[in-house]
Image (cartoon, rainbow, N blue to C red):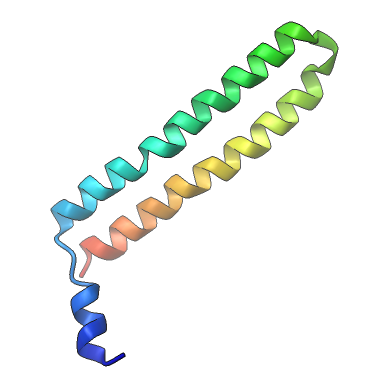
Length: 81
């Protein structure tokens, strides 16, 4: 691809980038709620599995929050151009 096509593709309005990040943060927010709801339900059903469920819950929480952090990075890249 030529440099002009790449420059045009990267030219994003900062306001649109903010709206895009806000929409992109909805997914991880819902995911975190579902993860910890499942941990609470699993702990209520089997209290002896609490430690294992919390470990799984926190590791999946980190994976879903990485998506939100990637969105923040993309927002700042788009808004600084």
